Length: 452
Image 1 (cartoon, rainbow, N blue to C red):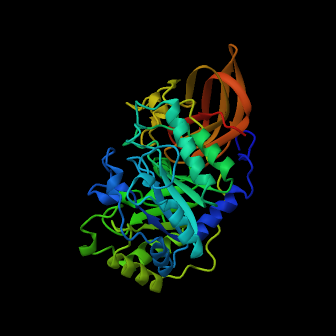
Image 2 (cartoon, rainbow, N blue to C red):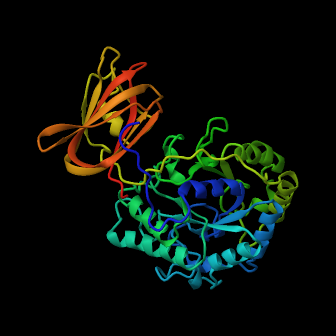
Image 3 (cartoon, rainbow, N blue to C red):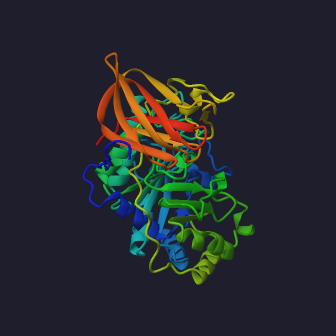
């Protein structure tokens, strides 16, 4: 192994992260509930200036939602507290753009958590970082926006009891362009763990990262509508796969007359095989504009409950290495290296795209890459992601005060090589590949200064 191994400590942690990950997988099946101001429009991405006056359910009944989840043998729910257009469906003090200024004038998050807990179901919450109403989007983000996110999450994690997991969206996605640096992931992650040490953090957009390591998420997520599909045969990480029962995430006026997805297929093609692959299945059910679940959705959920019983014992999840939650200091830095093959230049190793690679020329016997951080910086973690497992022996050096120093020798054979060590300061890092089966292909090289 390269370097000294470290567990990543979390402030005030009670249960080990691996224990919480197992508990999440053991929940097996839950109800995603997309209910927010887009429910009252024909678009899933609502007008950011839509009036709170349109949020006007006449028969809101969260007990019905909980009963529907129970009928399907689900074990928890997850409600969209705020979607991308910024409307908050809880009694927040952070913005007037919230449900208390709608005709309903009722805290929907409070209603939901009370109903689901009364029914013996776990409670999770969804929260969008992207917020077009408050201009929390690329090119507009200020320190006040970051504090706004922290204040909203503090309300959600302080006022509603135990939250099993927080499902985050709109971060580090090509359509949001809000990076983990612009809104600092590690700061937000640490805040969540300080407020609720056992709350799992799942970023839906971390799916862009390889499926064999946890980057920016405690749970690996797969959004099927976005073309993200778990490998039922090869997955080794605690995972979640989500899919809507209807055509859209939020309710549309066509839903009562449109067939929902086939219950038998959902159980046999998703739920059962996922449970055997360390994966929790989250099925989205969209309440209508009255605040009720439609009859066709209720019938499908009841049918799923007839077909599916949660297994008494689910497979034990392999213990995963602590996730990366810090900013990558090497992202898009200047790179030098040995001869590349064709057009696959050194820059591809730090372009924040795991679908591109630096490819060594086959004639080079001792390939190397050198990363210039621009100035001396502290770091204590290096992660090397190959295109496929290949390099079996390597060394890492760092440049400080005008001299090169050896840092570690590694012999990891995994595709993703995580090296954690005592903190050092350096302005450059050199990666020397010593033993490999074929010309090395490096998808990404990450350098991190983790808080421990």
